[in-house]
Image 1 (cartoon, rainbow, N blue to C red):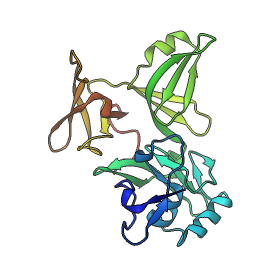
Image 2 (image 1 turned 180 degrees about the vertical axis):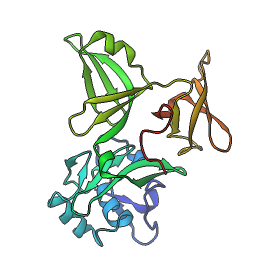
Image 3 (image 1 turned 180 degrees about the horizontal axis):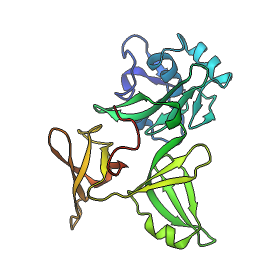
Image 4 (image 1 turned 90 degrees about the horizontal axis):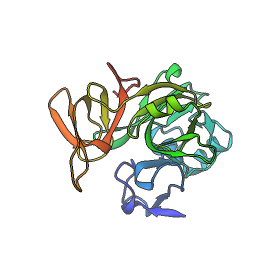
Length: 235
């Protein structure tokens, strides 16, 4: 099923009026308005394919990896913090928000096997084991009860790819480095100056100190990316 170009999300780098339809992202780990289909990445962003047919051939030959796994569906949704690898060209990229749009940032090979994931929920399995629910639909089990208590919704974990081993735990707290992933300041980053707990129906807010100014946004819009410095390339 195709998507009308005029209805495509703003971060799709396509000419809205050149053709009527474009690739529709499939159901997957990211929401429709927060992802880019692989085919558009290959053809319109990286330009390693001139046509949709060429893009499909690249995928069929397993010449592209998403988070260290090959994907053949041209509509597979690639989103926030996903790592794209093209081993044949020795090129590696990470998707981050920049200036209000999802953007591919080229990264060194040694950084292509780590990924930052935001904890969006915590549940308990039937065996009384804590499960961390992550922003990209991953689930990681924490068998040690003491360790499980340390992880909070909103925190970030750094995992290895593709085995999903936790390397670091980055808390959503004052002093750490945050990246705004939603709203009019999407893509801005800086040190978390303050987190405000608000009583009532309004959501909690956070203040981020950037290079130019302080920005207040919703706490839920902050993605922690480091302590003293970012763990990933963001420029």
